Picture 1 (cartoon, one colour):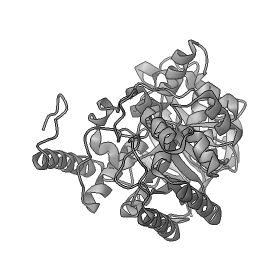
Picture 2 (tube, one colour):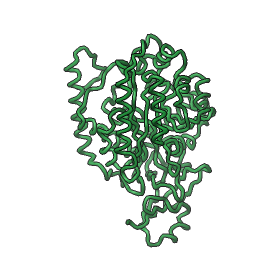
Picture 3 (tube, helix red, strand yellow):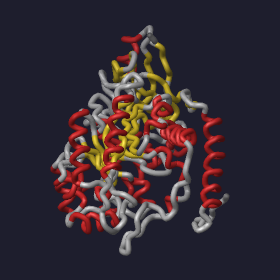
Picture 4 (cartoon, one colour):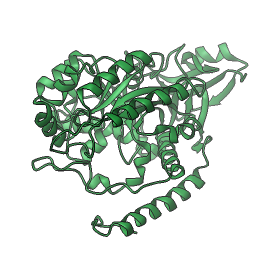
Amino acid sequence: MPRPLVIHGATIVTGDNAGTLYPDGALAVDNTRIVAVGPAAEILPRYETAERIDARGRAVFPGFANTHTHLPRVLARGIYEDLSPPHTPPFTGGLSPLPLPSLSAGEERLMATLGALEAIRSGTTLVLEEGAQLDVYADALAATGLRLVLCERAWDRARASIGQPGPFEQDAALAQDGVARIRALHARWHGRADGRLSVGVAAWAPDLASPELLGRVRKLQDELGTVATIHLSQVWGEVAAIREQRGVTPTEYVARCGLLSPRLIAAHCRCMTAEEEQTLGASGAAVAINSAIAARRGLAARIDELERAGALVTLGTDNMAEDMVEVTRTAMFMERVRRSDGRRPTPEQALTWATRNGYRALGIADGGWLAPGNRADFIVVDFRRPHLTPAVRPVSCFVHQGQAADVESVMVDGRWIMRERRVLTLDEPAIVAEAERVARAAWARLFAERPDLSRPPGFAI
């Protein structure tokens, strides 16, 4: 068993309710837990035989919790960000007019690993990954050292995409297959990787799931004792489709089907009425605000209204990028613009959304802030950089001016998975080189097989 570790001389940003900072602080780790936090002068004498790391010029922050992402979608970087679906009628199905190129199982694993690599480099310690057939790359994600919640999705609307108008063609076989995949993933992976990996349930989206399926997903959630997630009010086409299919709003629909609860993470929530925000908040559900992709799509969730209604606000990256530093800043900036308020939300609020709230939403009550007894999930940020100097208000400085490249080290469960800017769990050069080759070949293959598809402007293949 490794001996205790003490990081000292850094600014310790605890992320607690009081916003406690220790400018010349120390943090002690023993095995998988934080055992002491406070002024270095008090902590160091208590751990004279511990391994010591002098971290002067750095700050220690809680690690980021990404509560909604699809890691293999990094395949579509620079493409889907500029191909949003229409926000006004006539609506078309799907989130992009271009399909994703097909990938082999090995290629899917590679792209998911590339996304995880970016997540680690931007200071992420906890990820909720939502998708279909996650078993294809669950082992690759477990090997990264990240803390993970894998949510396998179910749906039963045949031959349709999110936001697609028209009748709901219900397919019982699709539903059965989805529920079976959820059960199988949970049986195989829940609690694995020394407890870092848990498995949740997912219904893809309201307009892709029948009332019967939503009821089955909720029943399965209760049976397995885990979290659930769903895309909710993601695009205006979804809202129109649900009104056409069910005669109500998306939130009212999922509420009637019993899916709302404090253990639900509702992703997006950016096309909602005030009544929907109240309904969602009253249930105590968490909201995964995917601010960066929302900004790219020209949409914004009403964070203040959701929070006031009682929803737990968390942050996610969603598609094409895994940079939680960017996400945190974008969430704060978008909400300030929306409110016409240059002071609120504060950087401290945004950091809470991105850390402590995310851990709480994903069922990890002893993580997301730095305190004795909590899990040793944290990041070390290098403040000896021109854009972070002077760091007289370190939280404000990092949220306003920080970059992913400022993250120097990442610890999860008491283990360094990145140390002094070197990712220890992955062969970064090999992954980057192979992912570039695979992605270029996949997109070239798609356009060769589908000459009817239009290449987006600036496409360099």
